Amino acid sequence: MTGLSLNGPIADEALPILPDAGIIVDNGNIHAIGSFEALRATHGGIQVHVLKGDHVCLPGLVDAHTHICFAGSRAKDYAMRNAGKSYLEIAKAGGGIWDTVTQTRKATQATLTSRTKKLATRHLKNGVTTLEVKSGYGLSIEEELKMLRAIKEADSLVAADLIPTCLAAHMLPKDYEGSATAYLGEMAEKLFPILQEEELTNRIDAFIEESAFSKKAIAPYFQKAKEMGFDITVHADQFSTSGSEVAVQFGAISADHLEASTDTEIALLAKSDVIATALPGASLGLGCNFTPARKLLDAGGALAIASDHNPGSAPMGDLLTQAAILGAFEKLSNAEVLAGITFRAAAALKLADRGKLKQGLLADFCAFHSDDYREILYSQGNFKPCMVWKNGELAFDKHSH
Image (cartoon, rainbow, N blue to C red; front, side):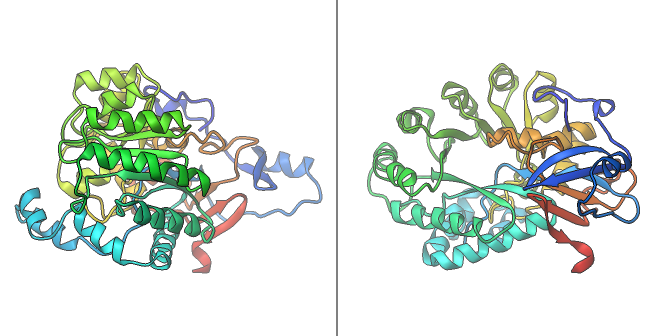
């Protein structure tokens, strides 16, 4: 994935493919890449691992938007939604985000750590070596801290890197007696300093939507976050527009969702440095339109693709499957899809040390048993990696499981 642009379309012909390749790993990083035989001839006295048969090697996949720290299930919501029930009807029946908030609040930190670890390990086996994990099912100072502490603890227990994000601005909690403005003010004033003190996250997210927070209400919250040095990311344009405008206004790293984005929002994002992150898992879970990925790329935007793995709208949690399906519906080249789940997704997390097989970057990569990289997306997620390395260490080997 080297030598490719962060923005705009990529033709498959532009993909740099190295045949009969070798990778030299040193101290968790890629020391050199080149012809296997040439590297072996010039580097004596090192341990050599030869893969038997044909393999395709890709950079470790990056999932830049997940909510895998949660408790409970929303299977009932999914069944009701598919049976034609509205969002309001589901909420009245005890479903919706608040159901997950209730279950997550009941769970101990140890339980959340264990569940997050389990799901992160599942992602790793599917080739994802870095994944972002949001809070947002606590919606009080103590409960948000519980979630972020659980994410931090889970990160120390899994091979994959978990990148924490504070989503205290997910929705106005039903048990909060004040206004949205008061709630956001309290979170910014009391929660933000603790996040920095305990080094729980340097990323602040918010859901800009009619059912969550307006662009007017969120402005002081993001302003405070920026003043304190946090990076901003936004749940934007999922059902209605205005979120992408906020993302551009506050110099967010990414604007995620964008299913409702029109040509106006697409042009705005494409002219900015904001990474547009498509979440096909939410489209599949809700049965709604996909992010206009083709238009975003053609306008010159930077497109990342993430799973949005969460218990409500995106329960599948399979990045490769979702990316392949998005590619089919939005007519994305293999190169564009793979860029969206490697180096462009890494950029959405402001991580310049991964997402490409390149000297000096992290030795995160995965191998697929094939002689043609196109087989990976052709199988629409049914073809998984047989081996995954994280920081140069073999973290998963299908043959030993």
